[in-house]
Image 1: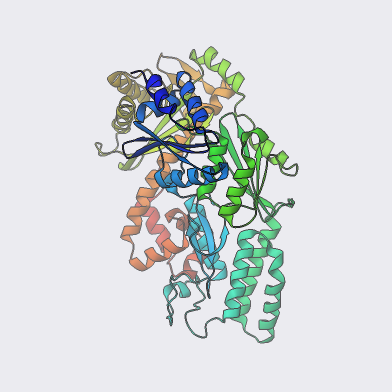
Image 2 (image 1 turned 90 degrees about the vertical axis):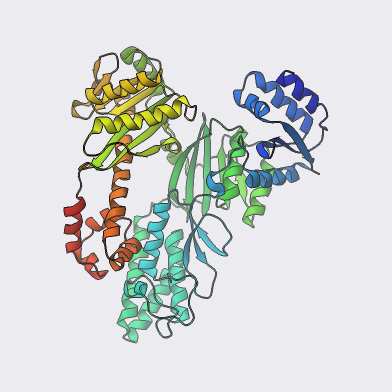
Length: 569
């Protein structure tokens, strides 16, 4: 029986009522949706089979359809989100690991501390999100260095002075007489001010305490307070002078398949991120919004553009308010105060129409949808790694990046290492694990190009292969041409970006492997100090000797690291 006919018979039995529908294959969930009229919505899915391959895959991969009726649309929305978060269907937008971006939370305890979390199960005050774990870790470490919030969890009662106290990372509230509860809570409020940017609330209190301890000649406590005051004043001085009329907000822009998020915290712009609506998922911006806030922090205001991107505004606003536990305002507008910054960051890259013409005129190929870039990195023949980065529809798609630890090559042989990495990638492409790229860009010259062509021929890939040499920025093409890219700025922007990104990813991976080996060779005490106070070995190398001495590390450690694992990319 033909797919549409078979499914039409099933859908005819669906009631024309509000609820949630579920496509399944045995115990595997394929897609979950909601509708005011279940039958009408499912018929829309069915009609889309002829034009949308993703819709066709839903019906093709499903063996059963069930539904749950609800009293109203809001109940359907709540049930849909619960089922999606629980079952993570293949074709729904579900965020990675079911958790959101890292947050910092100042816990609500007798002696609060700071933790990195991805959910909201801990009672306390949340700050973020941070778009990388390393950024969250660096900020957490800074909080301990400046405000001495306890590092032990749970706090021992009674405790004893530990290494973190001697390193200046903790004020030891577990040890009687080291810090009063009142002073500790003042440090907690200062840490909150540092994270929120609202320093004006806590500075008068810190100055008051500073004067108090000056009168009592307690200079150690004065020094700590002065350090905190300086940090908060430097933060205030370095902030953008713009004070937005809202304390915290997320501003979303949905434009041509791209999603842009701008964060305002403490009335200041603090960061932005660009997303691509996953091509293998169904749904609209509204579905993305619900998926994002199912696992991420919800601010008091959420703005979005264009207004038509959200159809069920009232229900979504109600859902966000319920999840936040406080009222959330959802508005389909970009606030005029932040509009210039938004416009500056969402300009279409590279002048797309111009670069399309240049591709056809100079490279004699159509404008590509997908380019994969490769590079090899090693250190004196050790830690040989490769990188694959992906440029897709006008921008880098970091979700598709891959790193390779080379397995079959010993010593310095860039060509064999490249052959292995490209072969492993090509094998996965032929298996259908990755889309077929329009172009392969290799970091290198003619030699690297020839290696890539051997792999292309072996796996019968239709991909156009080029190599970009750093010297003179010459693009070598598979049909024998040598194109001076600097004469074609629009092409150079794209290929230069991809080449540099592939190099960055490969070098960083190589460094990470070297760092692991370095740390294993160090005594446990030194390793612990580095892990707690530095983002990595390379921060140690760039730190002044005075800081190392203060932490109990000998400056000669830098020379030993350089001797054994010095920089050579």
